[in-house]
Image (tube, rainbow, N blue to C red; front, side, top):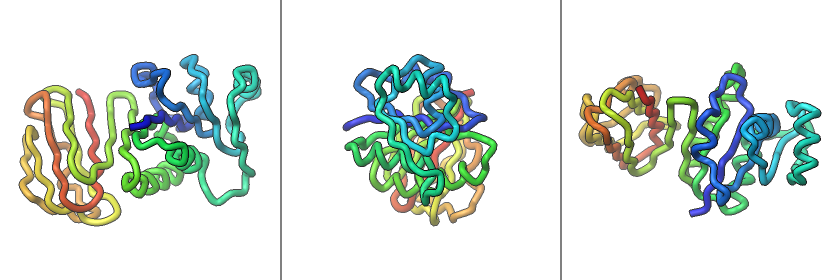
Amino acid sequence: MKRALIVLHGNKTDTSRIIDVYSSETLLICADGGAEYAREHNLTPDLVVGDMDSISLATMSWLEQQKVKILKYPRDKDNTDSELAIEQAIEMGSTELTIFGLLGDRVDHMSANMMHLSTVAERASLRIIEGNQEIFFVKTSIELKGKKGDEVSLIPLKSECKGISTEGLEYVLTNALLPFGSTRGVSNVMKESKAVVLVKEGVLMVVHRYC
């Protein structure tokens, strides 16, 4: 399974764990100003994608010195820089995507990115890391590893999710249905160091917050 690490440019984000996730075998793609975070952590991208309207001159100079490939798009385009970066990763054969830099003060961008990712989940496994939180888009099952007291939220995306069953969570679901827009699955709690979530139909966003 080919892995890609995608760095977006959310200005409210926490990329402190990026060094723990990155490896030399991982494809590193930055969406526009996400290259600022890569440079901050001394990581050289394999590719930078976007209209380059949020990269400093210093970082552009650094990218050129490192001979990083840049795909520059016009500012007037039909896709966000984040979507372009994600699609590039998939086109380059990546089937496992880890994303940093999602959170920012542009609610429109963040919401559009989440909706886009709910469709990407049909083609690749996804993990978003934001500080002490990890977000997954689940179509079949996932095993979470953490500790007792960690919070886990289950949020249906696109449409209702059917056949949801859980193990290791305080509030148990057995072959349950969560309608689209339901808050029933928010703020569950891990009873032990491992939890399992199963889904028979739909795309379920699973948010694991380490406490």
